[in-house]
Length: 151
Image 1 (cartoon, rainbow, N blue to C red):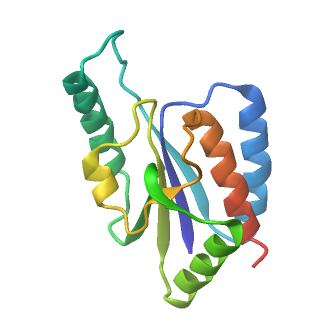
Image 2 (cartoon, rainbow, N blue to C red):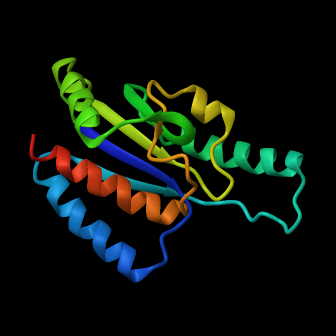
């Protein structure tokens, strides 16, 4: 099963890059894995709700253009379902039994994800009701995916 992670924006922090590289090495021992970064849109100060929606739509179009047609899509969003590590691992084993060829996780930018991207998700995943920086969520998600390599 191929694993794809699509993220809005570039990762700039060296310490996060190093940790993500560490977990990527673990993942790639068992699964093909790639991180795809799509450009983020600049958000003007005091942007209106309409402007923010337009920004999310532009970023969403970029995201959707990168998803393989046969992929199971999992957007990370606050309205998603929270899973424990164990529950997520059981779900992963189920997808393996179903011979899913590709799983695409999606992390939005600072404004979140567009409705179009969220609606494409087979499973909407939430790590918390709290809001975390999307750069940190990338690390947390990659760490959780690395645990799947031991199954």
